[in-house]
Image 1: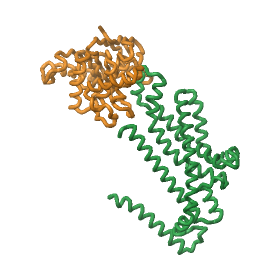
Image 2: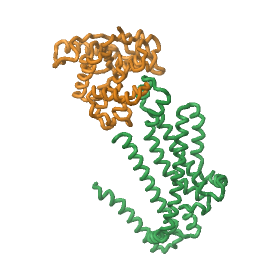
Image 3: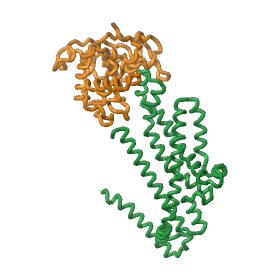
Image 4: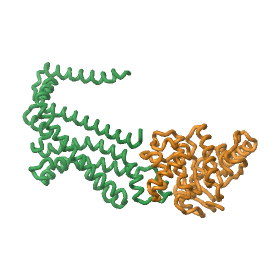
Length: 255
Length: 248
C-alpha cells in the first residue's frame, strides 16, 4: 500500500465516523448536554481556545515538574539500590506498593498535607508518585543489564566497584532509563489531571478544572473540547519524549 | 618457560554435571595453541579458567597474576556501544589507573597496529564485524599481555575476513610473540593458526589428540595447499569424528 493511502485511510474513517455522529445528533435531535455534535464541539473549542490553552499550559508545567522530580528521585534511588543488594530487597516491595496504590486513594490526604491553598504542590507530588515507578524500574533493570562478557572483562582487569558502576552499569542503563522517561511522561500528565480532579479546587487552573467546570454546568461541548486538547497535548508530549529518546541514543551509539 | 597451565582440572556446574576434565594443558611462552572440539566440550570453560574468571571444581590452575598480563578476546567483539574505538581500546589501561592521555595514546598505537588508525573516533555501531573484532583485539593487546586468550573470535566473520584476520594475528604475534590460546570449532583455522592443535572429546571435555603443525609463521603463501597441512587437518578431523562416533 502506498504512503498516501496509509495516511488517507485513517482520515477517511475519522471523517466517516464524525459524519455519522453529526448526522445522528441532528436526526435524533439530541440535546447538546447529552451529546454535542462535532460542529458544536469545534465551535466550543475555538470559542474557549485561549482559556483551554492557558489551562493546558498549567497542566503541562505541573506534569513536567513532576517528571523532573520523579526522574531525580528515581535515578538516584536506583543508583543507591543497585550497589547494595540488601537495600534493593528492602526498597523493592515498597516501590511496588507505591506503584499499585491508586493515586485517587491518597490524593485527598496529600492535598491536605500540601495545604489547601497550594493545590499545585499536591498535584505535582501526586504526579511524581505516578511517574516515579517506570523510571525507577527502568533504571534498576538497566543498571543490571550490562553485557556479561563486558562484566567479565571488567573482572579480568581488576575494575573497582566504582569504575564498574560509572563506566559500565550507568551507560548500559541509558536506553532503559530513556524508555522509562517516555512512559513516565505520559503517566505524569495523567497523574496531574487525575490529581487535579480529586483536589477538586480551581486553585491550579489546569485542564481538569476546565473539564469539571464545564461538566458541572452541563456544557458538554466544552468538556469534549478540553478532553481533545488534553489528548493532543499527551500525544505531543509523547512524540517529544520519543524524539528525545532517539536523539540521545543516536548520540550515544553514533548511529 | 610456561606462561600458564591447567593440571588435572575438572569443572562441574550444578544441574549440568561435569563439563570439563580431567584436563591438562601447559602453554609455553610464545606458543600458539588451538583448542578444537564439538560444542559444549568445555573449550570456553578452559579459557575462563586460564583467564581466572572461574575456579575449577578440582585440580589446579597456574597463571600469571599480574593485571594486564592475560588478555581475553571473546566470541563477540564485546565493545562498549557508547564509547569510541579509542575509548574502548584504552579501557584496560584506564581501569588500571593509567593517566587518560597516556592510555589514549597507547590505545591509538594499538589501533594503528591492527589497521584501524583511521577509525579512532568511530563508535562500534559504525564499524563492520571485522573492524569491531579488530578493536577488540587492539584492546586485548594494549596492555602488552604475555598470554592472549581467544574464544572463537572469528566465528561470526565471513570466510575472506576470517582469513585476513588470521594473517593479521600472525603478523601481530611476530612483533610481540605472546602465547596465544585460540578456541575454534573450525579445524582448518586451528591448523593454520596454531603451532599445536589440541582436540577435545565431547563433554566432559578431555584431551583426545594433540597434533603439532610445522611450518613458518606467519604462514607462507599457499600454506593451505601444502601436503603437511592437508595431512594434519585430516588427522585432526579424523580424531574428532572418531570421538563423536564413540559417544553417539
